[in-house]
Image (cartoon, rainbow, N blue to C red; front, side, top):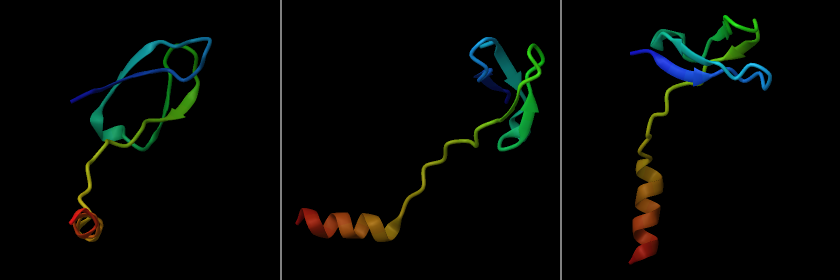
Length: 59
């Protein structure tokens, strides 16, 4: 699935669509030639140690 994002150049701000496999890599805006890194995907990590500590604090 393609990633939809805005060019970070404040003078450009064009909407860009890049392939999902370029997450974390440098890409160039086709309009203004600004190089920027595509953000990594947001994943939710479950921390068993943190969850156990939080459960103990609640009781």
